[in-house]
Image (cartoon, rainbow, N blue to C red; front, side, top):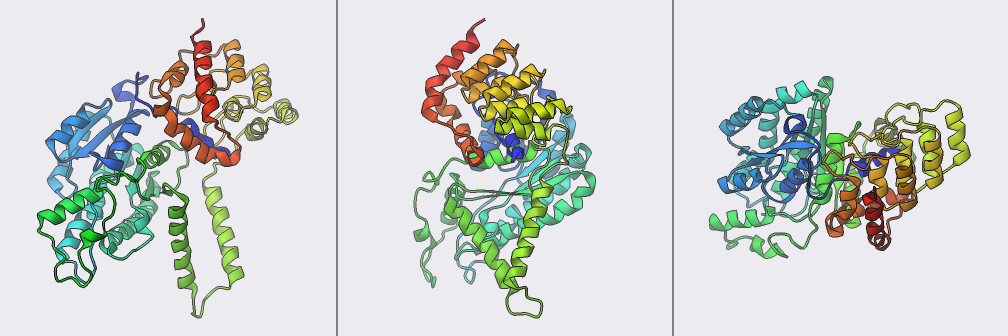
Length: 473
């Protein structure tokens, strides 16, 4: 369970980067293809505000100029179908001297049309971008990624699991990218390079608008089609504004780049129905593969196999036990006798759990003021940060834990310390609530099942109180 704290605590800086605690050259560099709009642009915004320097791939001069105005972002002329663009991008990154820690293969295009009527040239175009693009870019930047023991993420789609009528060409490309991701992950493991896929559902983007523009420019007409006009099947605004902003996708990429032990796949969807549809389809494929042959498994055998896979995947995401894990569990539960027993047995009060959090941060997050007091009395370092630079004071401010924040300040918590993005505890509670609300929503969805209660009305009412406490000298 505590592995999820890495996600929550790493998100303290999702609002505009008002100050930077890092120099430009200290930031790990990440290249994002297709970074001009939608998911790619949101990734660039979130990563650049959370400790990374972003090389943002774009094709149009006006988009490059716009990206260059963003802090910690440098635009790169990059059409993933043009080898000379890719080679020039590699040369630029090498010349800059930062190296390259992360590669996000995000550039993609959409297609709609019946398979038996789609021109082969449409397949050539779409595969050139969606599948050969990541292949080319990854191959070109492989040496830099291997040198940094970095990470590669391919942006696939739930269409890489589900295939629907008239989206066959697009699904073919995303299924292919899923297979590419699996093989690449196995091949890069020997170099300590992690590779993963993120499978977004329906989010706001310009991918449909761009598709329609291409179809109209090519003179598309449904005349003579057995299925009628494909444009008639497109419902809702072309900018997909009926869907949520892709914040959750960007947060998944942030987790992949910062987690000690990231997941191999990140299914990110805006609603339960999309998750169920995707997972049901994956299970349906398992059932179909198992049907009616000499080596089929029984239901009980399939269930046992599923249990084994679930356990193996769980263990793969958990680091080996480290000193202080029992202490963290006691802090999470607010179990003072267990906490004191762990300390008496020599548990390090400042040890980090697999997510990179101290017991003091755990107790602060889950509102256990007595556990906070016991840890401080045992000598826990009040300013000990997690891996993203977030201290217990930052968490107490974010979650408006007045009693805990008062205890931390009384024990010498440093108000001036900043997260990786440059945020002090005071800045966390003075940024407009609407700017930081997506963070609370995400924390609630991830940590709610473990007992984290986020009352927005209480938090909004408490923020001025917390700000006043932090402003006092």
